[in-house]
Amino acid sequence: MTIQDAKFLMSNSRVEECPAPTLPEYAFIGRSNVGKSSLINMLTNHKGLAKTSSSPGKTQLINHFLINGNWYLVDLPGYGYAKISKDARAKWARMINFYLRRRENLTCVFVLIDSRHQPQAVDLEFMEQLGSEGIPFVMVFTKADKQSGSRTSQHVVQYLETMSKSWDELPRHFVTSAEEKTGRDEVLDFIAEINQQ
Ligand code: GTP
Ligand code: MG
Image 1: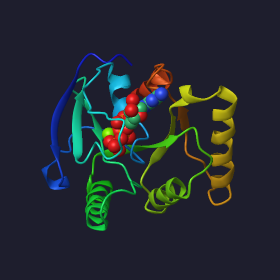
Image 2: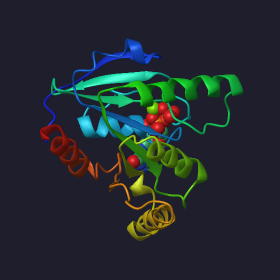
Image 3: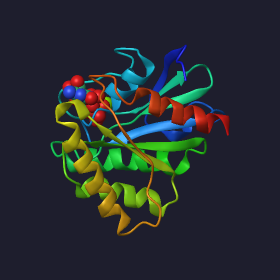
Image 4: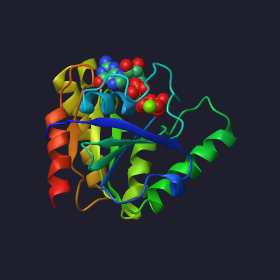
């Protein structure tokens, strides 16, 4: 798929105030600093569209981007950021949970996972939760440029093996690097495929 047009629409904290749910929507979620906003910029070929930062906790609201005038990309705040207050964490969790459960046009959630690490409980639990609620999702292993391809594959296999113990069917997965712009076509083709259904 070619991205002809990508524009920021709005940020808000309430699912009721999101744009009218008339177009397919794809949301990016994952731990703070995993590279959600960077991946959105890489996919849209639009440096600076989504705000990124080297310190975790940059994205704090639900951010809608309209792509090619006919689908939405959504940048969400990360989970698992230790350095915020309990109150702030609970508020974020509430916002994200409401969004994930109530957003009727949410077509697929992209769960971003740092490809440098072995399976992390927080990511496994988050996906477990999505699965148990029947929210469709795929996995994206980010920052693949940070280590060798074989190390990345090793971590991917470890995730899939761990998940296969409790899942009949494994979610689809992608490997990306926002730095080297890898995995772009695969992710965009996947979205195009669903949009055509
Ligand atoms: P929050 O909004 O805070 O949850 O973070 P985020 O998941 O949106 O991460 P963000 O895109 O802001 O990136 C965090 C840091 O990781 C930045 O310093 C990025 O430059 C870096 N980064 C993101 N993706 C990649 C990647 O593919 N490769 C490398 N080397 N660095 C990356
Ligand atoms: Mg972000």
